[in-house]
Image (cartoon, rainbow, N blue to C red):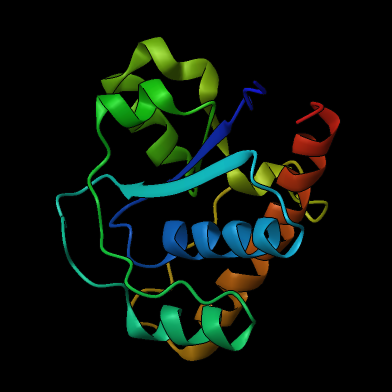
Length: 161
């Protein structure tokens, strides 16, 4: 019997209806296209929006770019999610600090997603929230997340999973 060691990646943003949803959709899509089944991907938010549907502009852009993830509903971050995750990627420094304050025992798992991007300049690691802004802002956000996911994939490949 072969037991696969499944890596668990969790993306977190404020409400889990735009950025962490986009990150989950992109990574799941890339893993699916590569035939990878050794990585589980999920997302959550820091404010109680349980059950709220994904932002329609985010859903449309993700689908247009070839990474559809339909039926997503917002989930609130829990201690159980933190326990299960191998890596927790956040969109903003303030989110990282909030999670570290709430769950200090998991601080070593938390990382700013943008720091994985080859575009990261070592300064501002935040990926801004485009919620209720123009479609251009959503596309810029998608691009930042996409470039960061490329870096995450390189990290995963280097860990032997």
